[in-house]
Image (cartoon, rainbow, N blue to C red; front, top):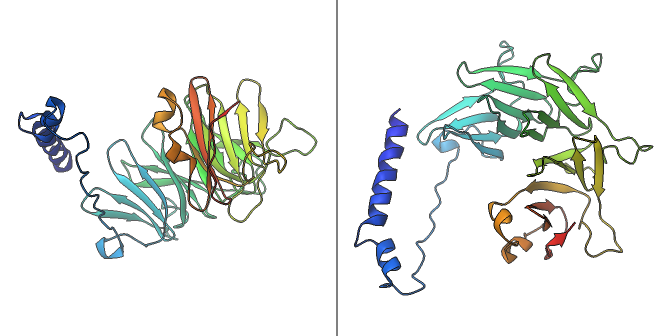
Length: 304
């Protein structure tokens, strides 16, 4: 409550300052400032173990709808409220604790539950109200269990389907009523199947199609897949050495729909990324940016 009040007060003060007749914004709109006023220097605040972070190797970040910042490290899941950290680690005597402290992925579903993918401990669901975890792990004797315990990608799509990408077990959806998974595997005899069982990234586009990045974690990928939920088929985009406009690498580390993509062409700055390639795929109504592990190069918007 105090955090919310503090946020509201800061917001009111900020807007009051910006809209006051003598403010910088008011002067700029009136034309009394030079066209290119100097930017305010960006200041970085560091959050380390000295401030309460469980460990300094951060692998995942997520901000939930309440404003809390979730930080996944190699030794603990952290919730930061702007002042203090709440740390979640595995307790061998508590089956409702998180299954493993090495965190790869964090997201939130429409109900408010926090989903956490781990590096070998499977998938965890945290109820923020109780602080208790539900574990989903691979069971070789149960074909309906999580297909693999290394989980780097989790996504709830616009239809409410929870997708789980694993490293080695393929792509799966979870029936939250039964706790059972339906798994999509790579089938070398089926060109419409998943391109690789090693999933690294997931994203849904505005048309409802699911984009699946493969590879990562020192595993060879098959490039980028687009899954059509209506047909159940995967369409593949892969690196072609003979085609300079193809995907730069078959190992995709991340993909996301930039906020500016829906209103115009890709900014040139997004055509570059150090130690990786940022590619921009554009179709009518939406765009997709993705990073592949390759040498740095500039990518032009491609129409598909």
